[in-house]
Amino acid sequence: MILIRSSFFFLLGACLCFKGSGQYKWKQVKDKDGIRVFLSDIAGRSYKAVRVECTFPGTYQKLFSLLDDIPNNKDWVYNLKNSRVLKRLNPLEYWIHSETHLPWPMSNRDAVIHVRMHTDSLPHFFTRIGTGEPKLIPESSGLVRVPHYYAYWKVTMPASQMLHIEYLIEADPGGSIPAWLSNMFVDKGPYETFKKLKELLQK
Image (cartoon, rainbow, N blue to C red):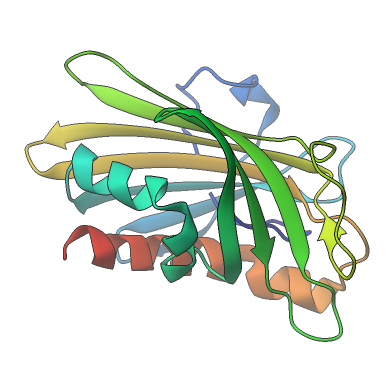
């Protein structure tokens, strides 16, 4: 998953209970192809939270397989260069290391993320939470480690063969990011990510 100062992609409606949703004041910045992107300032932070809401044809099984195929997440996550599983406790809990490409002369960013997934027995929904653990492995030369990362997915099926996805991300890319680069990614990254995900879900 991905990062960049004045925001970088993904989730959640005010009715959801996570990290105190009342702290956000969402402003919609894009509504295209069934993908709605919202931004919110975060008190005391220089980067923004990003939220995405969308409804696509697809199934839990197909989405789960795309999310779980960590090495190939680069096929749909915007500007993701590579990602790998560091450790896996079970199919629903694991740690990953990812690298995101930034244009020259910026250094690429890397993140260490603890992923936990949950579903009910039927299932009516599943959730996926990613929490940054930047100290888990040593930093790599030439990369800037992401100091704060939190991402939350909630996925439901409002109808047969139809997925409703709510996604939120807070990601501090660390280092210095110029305003032009922040602005370029403010809605492009989330939109392009979910547009590609929509295409893959229908294959």
